[in-house]
Amino acid sequence: MKKYILSSLAVLSATLFTACNDSLDTDPRVTELTAATFPGKPADVEALNAATYSIMNTLGGGDQSSILNNPFYWWSLMSDDCYGSGGLQDNVAKSLHHFTTASENQYEQDFILLYGGISRANNQIETIDNVDWNDKNMAQRNQLLGEGYFMRGFYTLLLTQMYGDVPLITSTVITDEMQQQVSAEEKIYPQIISDFVSGMNLMGTTSGFGDGHANKYAAESFIARAYMFWAGFYKGVGDLSSGSAPAIDLVQQEGCTAASLSQADVVNYLKDIVASGRYKLCPDFRSLWQYSNSLLWDEAHDGVGHAYAFIADMKRENCFDQPGMGNGNTEEIFQIQFMNASKWAIGGTYNNPRMYSNYLSCFWGLRNGATNDNGKRSKTYPFNQGWGQGTPSCNIWDDWTYAENLGNYKDIRKLGTLIDLDNELEAYTYEKDDCEESGYGVKKYADVNLDACAADNDSWWSRCPGYSASSLDNKQQGDHFEDYYLMRYADVLLMLTELTGQVQYMNQVQARAGVPLTTSYSLTALQNERRWEFALEGLRFNDMRRWSGVDKHSASSYAAKALQLQEGKQIVCLGQKSAKRSMHHMTSSWAERYAATKGFLPKPQAQITLMSGKMEQNEGWKAEDSPAKDYKVIYQ
Image (cartoon, rainbow, N blue to C red; front, side, top):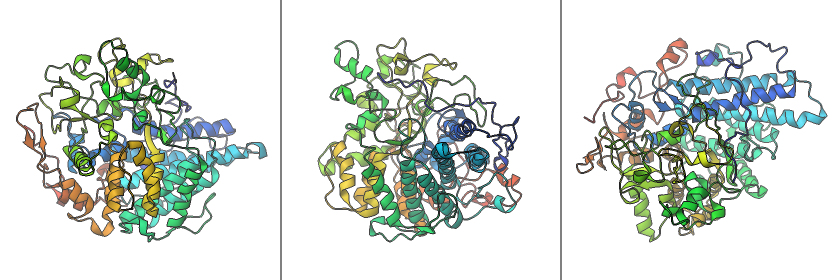
């Protein structure tokens, strides 16, 4: 069996790098060494590189202020595929879903973390030539420099998609001009895509296969993601298959010498990934997710105890923990990796003690039931309990079912993504303070138990070769090691179809799902395919935004209308399954809140104050936008 417990990324001591709390002043350099002496050798740059990547673990793992820091999780909650849900006290999750805020600095953590990552990348870029590189290790130098550019582009992309127009920081020496927020459309996206282009031209093609690092292909795929958002959201190109998106100007820097980048360039980069043959779709969609592990598969066939029927028809060689599947699988282009090193504590901006556990599995886990025993295998086998925040919406189940019925087919991805609680977990009960329960749970990233495990709420990971208990010593919260996918090969194929109108790429994704193949391109078919393939992976929300166009962010836009369809759905609240309520927005409507904010979060007031007038609050989040922007308790 493949071993997953040890991370393949180097992990630095939490005390080696420091950063002050002021996000724009973050300085990740070693405190006891100076820029004149560090980095002095290639291994030092490798250490800087590991520190740059480590921000991803803090984003993807760890519990800060009762909400997971993962931006893609936030975007799932903001989309029409999830509700906020959780308990009465879980106001951050519900705030995200209703486009409200319970405090003026509620969304500050990611703002700080992303600028910290940018600062670390800047330091890596600026100091790399302190090392006396020679011809023998110049490829290593270029790879590390390319990764620095790529990660700066990646963190900046997340930052501006979350907060809009922000200061663009491209140096560790932050000038007054650099502290002023700038136009994302005109200044930030050209820099983001230039950073990805630099990464593409500097990095090689040998790294990045299961080792957690970026490579040329990761850069090519993120060029496409960033360009497509810029062209759709800011330039209002509704259907990219027409080839009418404008070119974007580039910034001259090492690895990026072209004056501009066109839609045709983006298509060529994606085709380069396909032509390389380095990636391919896993043969079974279920192979991507830990519920298909071979230990659970064995229990489905041994005739003893429980049997998880959903994976019984799989080939054992396609199980999550088999070669080429699961973590490090054949379609994984870029991801966040985790390891068995979490500690029992909450806190630490850059070194959260729980950062090495994929805490999404805990946040999306099934909440305790009315008898406080949903962690018992007799009730929820093979899934474990968790916080139940961000449960799937009625909308995604209903829309998916409608599409199946219309086409007279069954899409294995629906039950490969969602738990149908009433039919799959008949003994499941709701907690007395549950809010916005749809009757569905998250199967992607869901933690899995086994009959073979030692106790209820144990995790299948504890049965893997190489496992040793972490210092967290709480399997329900600490033993979550499934990679978080940031870019899959399926996305490359679907982006190619959207950019070219050529359905043969999308057909590969459809064929794996066992659904009818699209014979002629339509944007609607592409939109549905992206929704089903990447449901609950955090891509839906920004897809909705770019399909709305910059001039269409009204209450009648694609995103606003899709979000508004949540109104009136029948949900379970306060554990009363027999007395369902109608879903309502807590302050106004989803359409109005999306139109007011354009999908951006509020900039934290503490950071606005810190910048002394150089940064402004986003539309829809200003004082005059009360009470529509203010969190309101509606479940009592």
